[in-house]
Length: 473
Image 1 (cartoon, helix red, strand yellow):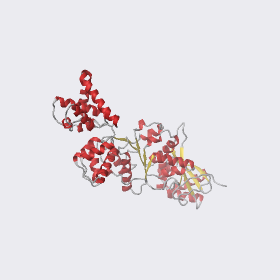
Image 2: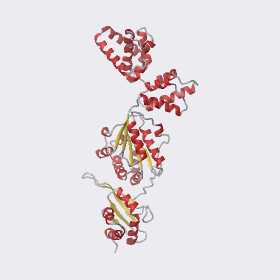
Image 3: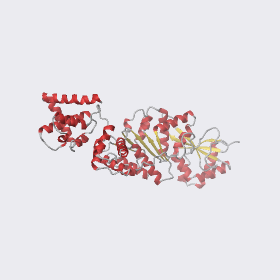
Image 4: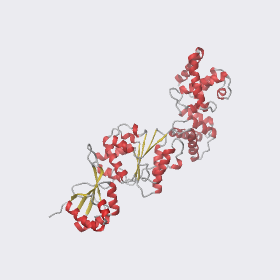
């Protein structure tokens, strides 16, 4: 008479008990539930992925001995692993994994089910390929007040993936602030220190497309199994998971498995978890388990350091005044700053001329587009200076003569109104003044417009002149 799974497992336990202390037996074998036996292969259910890995690492020889004694040579063992306990609305989520040693390692031949090979993801990605860009490293990621927390946390994770409390690590920030650079630096550092670890970088778009293809080809289990073997998973731009219910569900289970197994999860987003739209609450709550760190717009000092580092990497020495001009003028994000530097290098090379302030200003006119109009600070200064019968140099001078102060304030006012330069950048273009001077100038012009009819008329005249420039463009 064929034995049922309960009888087989009960016989195995009697043998296991002889080789395992009472405490270990009660902790690691009593919670196991037998679920299937087909004559050669026994399937047992364990309460978590960690439980499964502990058995495989510490008790595999004991299990092998018991199975061979009970079933005979050729015995096979498979696990049914509870990844998520579920709740009233969602049933428990279970994955099936084969044993690594009993019966000759992984196999897909258990009757009545398709286990899938966790180390093969057909038609989706080549196994063990990290998809990391080797050009990204911590050495080239410039640290400043704008990114210090994120960089420090990333470096700690890179040294001890899955061990620190920064799991998951969520890095968020706007476009071009270095999110991808930072998380790929983490991945490359892990690979350098722990080459045996499987690190995988994937964009959310690629993850979604892989999942859709897996569904179409009936390979969802293979898709999931591939991601379950990852030691450090880096997902870029998770905000794009919004309103994609099935993708969120599969990622939720992958996330649970990796986290419970002590594997590292690193994610990026364009906003903090609390502001992500279209994501399930259970997924959002998990995003908040570790550390969330933001990347802000780089400050002036950081931009200066970035410019020097980028130009040194190209073997080019940039004059201090050019570096300062670019750092003040391009204050949006790192990507735009890099674009300006590439264009500057290209023009200098093609025209066979030295990089100087004149060339930098020429480049900026072609790249930086001001908000609302194409009027730049240089043109505003020239127009205002001519209107008040002054020289542009007077507006940048330290003199406190009343007529020059008024003209300078007016030019600052229009620079604030018609360009996208920061207050700090505007101040720089007016003789290196600070942002508080610009704030005072704008307020002074607004106050005078309200009480002085002649002054208001002159402001309107200047507006018309600047609008004419806009119309010509």
